[in-house]
Image (cartoon, rainbow, N blue to C red):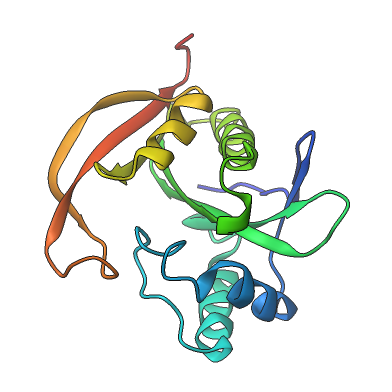
Length: 182
């Protein structure tokens, strides 16, 4: 898929922007080292900023390659990254994943970011579905997706391994927004 992703996606309260290597310290401090914020993520909680730097380097290699995009989440007018949101392209469908600093939970920021990315994704030619999963015990993430207009489709049994919880695959809810749905 050839697409020119925006390096910035503004929302009323946020600026989603392409991360920079200089963001590693902020990412590490805001959420990557926090075992509560990373509990349901697909990577282990970072032990040092070097891991966060490696993570950012890998994501930036993928930027604009047509497979994965990741934006840092900043709260206006600050430029400090307090979370991330990513989307991975697979034909006509795109899945998203996200995290935000625990100190900002309950602020509505994550739903605002998910809505902005989902709107942008569904505006792209040839994309008809944006979807995401969350552990069935992660009720906060389920609520984020619902507030962003996504609909729960069901449960995927033993779908993902969340290494900060267990090495066994866990059940996940699947949510989506489909082009043309109201």
